[in-house]
Amino acid sequence: MLADLIALAVPPSCAACRAPGRRADAVLCGACRRALPWLTRTPCCGRCALPLPHAGRCPARDAPFHAAWSAVAYEGVARDVMHALKFRSARPLAAIMVAQICANAPSGLLAPDAAIVPVPAHPGRRRRRGFDPAELLARALARRSGMALVCALRRSGTPARQVGASRELRRTPGRLGISARGPAPRAVLLIDDVHTTGATLSGCAQALREAGAQRVCAVTWARTL
Image 1 (spheres, rainbow, N blue to C red):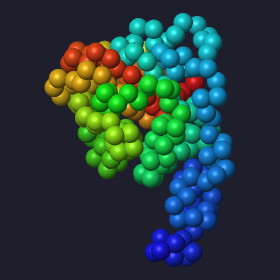
Image 2: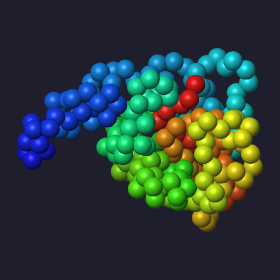
Image 3: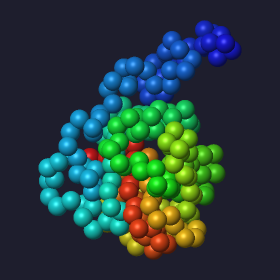
């Protein structure tokens, strides 16, 4: 009731396009939802999550994770949505992203015996933002799916900015400072917001494998093409 009254005085706006909305709970307007570039409408590689056929060899052919999947391409409206979540603290978007992941994920990917493990943000970035986007998604997914949530990874060292870094720099050994907190679950669903080169996912998967994980599947809401 209170939210509706506030919405009458100050109409809510879409987190992506910032157009005024009519409902207090309309975090993402109908036009932006319809404009999302779904990857579920085209065949994608189960290893790297890129549309098939590959231009060359699969970039995840040697990755320590066993499979990867993403719901949307990181372009257009999806890029605006992610920017709103990460840089404008539009946290309610996480629930929408997770609902879309659950509705479109391939059968068997969200295995109930797997533990959800979020890709950890560097402590400095987490303090500046006030939250960790990947952990926000992981917690929403755990609530929705009933799967266990295990914060099995940590990040240390100097923050390594991935945006704008070359593929070679992103994949420099030890650059990300990711390690396991202890023994890892046997089956892991590794969660992050965006899959770009796969360097961060590979670093996390490697740490989990070294800590005892037998199978690691990577799931993100968006995939850079």
